[in-house]
Amino acid sequence: VAAVAVAAPAVATVAPPAAPLHCPLTTLRDRLHLACFFDADSHPLARHFVRHYATVVGVRLERMTFWVHAPTTTDANGVDDPRAYATAAAAAAAEHSLHAEGVDDVRRISSRWSDKLMLNVTNEFIKALPRDRWLVFANIDEFFYFPCDMQRRIAERKTTFCADMEDRVAQSRRAVELREAPPIDEQFPVRCRIRQSLRPRGQRPTTTEKITLFLASPAGRPHRQYKSPHRLFSQYGKLGRCNNTGSFSHYTATTMYVQAIEKKLRNFRWNPTVEMDYRSQLKLLRADAPLC
Image (cartoon, rainbow, N blue to C red; front, side, top):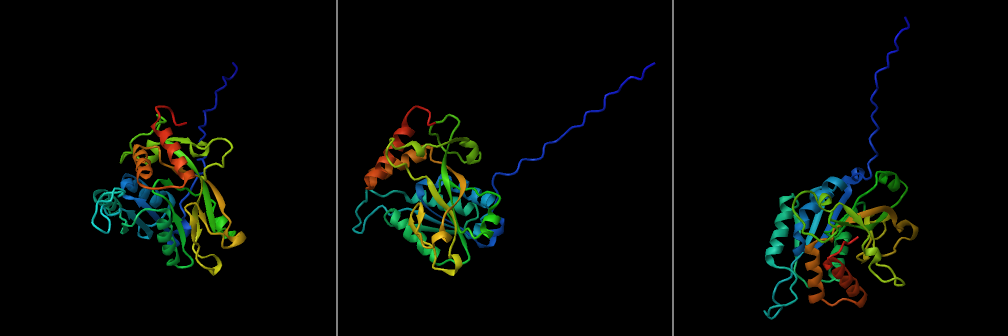
């Protein structure tokens, strides 16, 4: 009688885990600082922001510095100022959220809002850093990521890093309210390139690249300084060139951001190009149609 062939038992195979797309800046942890200047009305983002930079990027809580912009509601003569952009209650809520997450260095700014104010405050902060420190300077709605080969890049004397904005929107692809939970990336899982198509064809595209990380004083030279919210001064030639790390998440597809744009357009004067961009964003976010 012929022997009956017995099939060998199936051997389960387990695929190796996928390599992570991003990693915390572990090797910089003792020299890494985070700075953020934000309007008090954006305080619902604060807890999401701190948790992201503490866990995903690896910034220690004691190395985080926040300026909460909350101008007084009266001018020097005690007259109500209609351009006041945030209330004392919003500022208190912002400070409470940050302290609750373990952040101690929270400073309130009451001067009139402008990009110049933000850059002056930030540049003075940079000048006070030890020369070997690294800085992440992000808006409250900007969540940066860094690839897992950063140690190699830094060893190759890269001192300035940048990335491109990637808008994050809700599953409905419409502006929705930001909630305290679940995590922000779960609330806004869809990735879009909204800002890249804001301006009409033929016009210079909106700037969507931002500095995400830099060494305060490369090779012992004078401290880096911001020229604009998106650019540092070109102080160091090749040494200061931006090394691109991919994209970062930009969370502005919210009803809170719609209100923020409305206030900016109502209370402040902008150059025509910036005003056009804000109005284009507002029209898109208000429309009862998918954002992307």
